[in-house]
Figure 1 (cartoon, rainbow, N blue to C red):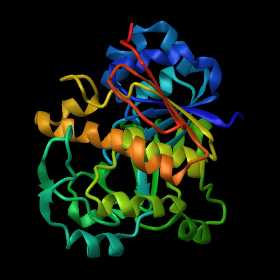
Figure 2: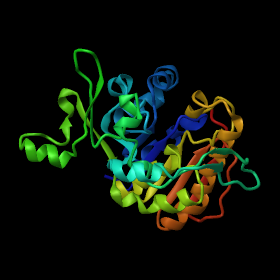
Figure 3: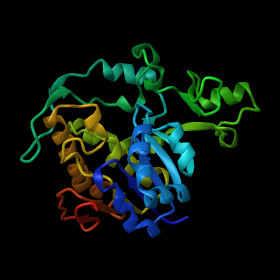
Length: 298
């Protein structure tokens, strides 16, 4: 397996994966939900062919919307990962109680935006009693079951994998993908040290750039990260988040934070890793290990 990986977002530049498809064996598909797959990806046969042949990791935020039947039907799905660390509900409750409201980090080119601020160990929750929707909970153990009588569903437990294995020695912790049972893996615990500083700095640590990079570098030991479909929310309705937020300033802030994370945090933490970005958005970097290929998507 090569030391490179592709991180593919939902921005208009996602088709630029065709420019470097020979450079990697594995792809992280970021929040590729059913609508995006059917309405956008499958309409480009060349992109769809790449995703059918390469090993695909479905990488989702807490909504888990990217774990969907269309991905399994059309792509070569290898594993499922959520941008949460192993659940620690007590630690999460303790820090969630300290959350305040205020302005996110801002500077020239980054709008001043007020919201509920980031707090430490958010990535260890949320706990079961705080959510009405089962899918939104960071369960200690989670599986995605494709073939149930009621259709695809989340199978979960409030016990850790180790506890379940101790009670049932025949239990397979990795699930049984051949029978349609996929484990949903958390982020490695070793990524936590890289979440503290940007949280304290009031940075929006999004799924498409930051969590995927940490998983690729720390979890997969990759040294060369290729990005496409990351256009920093520079155009209204271009990118997955526009479906959920109508506030332009919020998404402009998130896009600016993505650039800051790529320019200041990731190169500092991982100076020996190359970050190569194929984007349609305006983006510059003075870091030698952040390489930008900017042009309009065809």
